[in-house]
Each structure stands twice: as C-alpha cells, then as structure tokens.
Image (cartoon, rainbow, N blue to C red; front, top):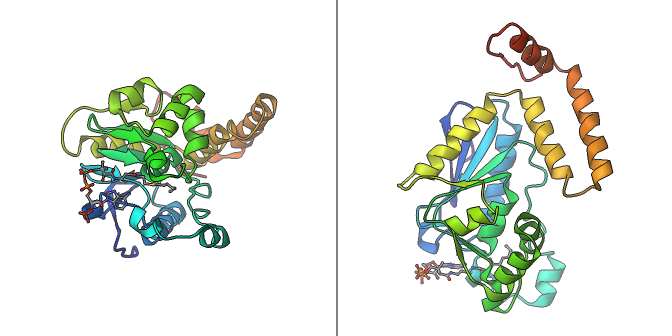
Length: 261
Ligand code: HXC
C-alpha cells in the first residue's frame, strides 16, 4: 500500500497515472523541507511502480506553490546553507517517467522552479508564474536561472528574475513556458493533465522513458553529441518487443498492445 504523507496527497485517478497533490493550503503550498522530502519519496515510489506510466503534480486552485517556505529560510545563515548544501536535494533528475505539472494560481519562486523541473507544464487560465526572490534579497536557488532561461530565453528570464514581476497564463503560453492554457473551471487543468498522463501511460514504457531521456539530453550535449545519442537510443529500441508490436500493429491495421518490454 502507498505511503501516507502529511504535506502531499497521492492518488490514482486513472489507470497508469499517479496524481500527487501538494497539500499545505493555509501556506499556499509553501515548500518546506518536509514537503520536499515527501514529494521526492512519492515521485520515487511512483517511478518504481510498474503499474504507473506517468505522474501528474498539482497544487490547489489558488496556488500550485507560492515558493520555498520563507519562514523556514528566514533565519538561516550562510554557513548553515553552505554546510547543509541547502536545496541540493531539490531535483527530479533521477525520475525517469514523465511528470506533468498542472498549474492553477500562484507558481512563484520555488513553485515556478518546481513546475520547471517537470517535463510538461499545463496551465489553468488562473496561473501566475514568477521568480520574486529579488524582493527577498536573494535569487532563484532551485534551478530557475537555468531552466527558465532555457525555456523562455535570456531577455525574458532576466526580466522576471531581476524585477520579480509575475506573468499570467497567456503570457506564459506565448513565451513557451507552458505547453498550453486549458479551459476555465475548477479542476480542468488536473483533468487535462491526467488525460495526457493516461495517454502517455498507454504507450510502450521503454520508448516513453527513452524519449524523455533523449529530450533532456538536448540540455546537456552539443547538437552533434545529442543527435548521435538519439540515434543510438533509437537503434536500441529495435531490441524491444514494443517496437515489433508497434510496427506490426501498424502493418496489420490494428491497435498496438504494448507489453513494456
Ligand atoms: C511561507 C507563505 C509563502 C511562502 C505564502 N505564505 N507564501 N509562507 N513561504 N513562500 C503564507 C502567508 O504567509 C500566509 O500565511 C498564507 O500563506 C497566505 O498568504 P497571503 O500572503 O495572505 O495570501 P495573498 O494575500 O493572497 O498573497 C498571495 C501571494 C503572497 C502573492 C502569493 O503570499 C506572496 O507574495 N507569497 C510569497 C511569494 C514568494 O516570495 N515566493 C518566493 C519565495 S523564495 P498566514 O500565516 O499569514 O496566513 C523562494 C526561493 C526558491 O521560493 C529557492 C529554491 C527552492
């Protein structure tokens, strides 16, 4: 049976989909260390669970997450942050299955960075993104300066990080920060993200995880290295049953029944 948590909720809304909901509503899902520990554990559990193909990460209607917990950080000294390597465990880089962020309301600071760690972001029309750390006398510390710049480019990233201004869902879509803005209404963004996760979970899981891996390689490699890596992984997929099934099903004009091996 799944672990129980105090700062998050974990459920199975559809076959193959694990839904993780940040659940500190009174603090607008401010991300404290306990919450992040639980989130890491839930993601690792879903990643290891054969019956899960993709994850959805969401918050509340009012806030995906309003940032790292300022009250927890307030009194930290440089030596403490340095010695504990504060935020070093803020990463999803070991998670191999796709994670879709379903963002409603505030995604600020660490909340925006958390969405950026996910593989796909869907936004409700109420979503607001920003990196307001500059107003607190600091800068993004959860990857914002890097992932945001990769996502929206230098000028826009500089503007957000140096002014602390929030952008709305439409602007985030125009800037390429999110895949798309879904329709209005409570729960719509979670429903759409869940449908997308279900669709991904219905594909061959070896190829899904390989696809995630090679897209992420685009951020780490030169173009020549990345193209070569992609081709090698592509070659490797010809060793799977799912490749035989997928191409066989096409030739026989039937639906593929992937066995994820
Ligand atoms: C701790 C927070 C919080 C946060 C909100 N709360 N954000 N607590 N850390 N990041 C708490 C408030 O203190 C308040 O608690 C309750 O949540 C409701 O918030 P309000 O401010 O009353 O709500 P509202 O007036 O609607 O304003 C919403 C808001 C504002 C605009 C999102 O809360 C806000 O500006 N929050 C801080 C945003 C921010 O600066 N984020 C970046 C954090 S630094 P009480 O007890 O008073 O009811 C960061 C560094 C990243 O993320 C480093 C890497 C991870």
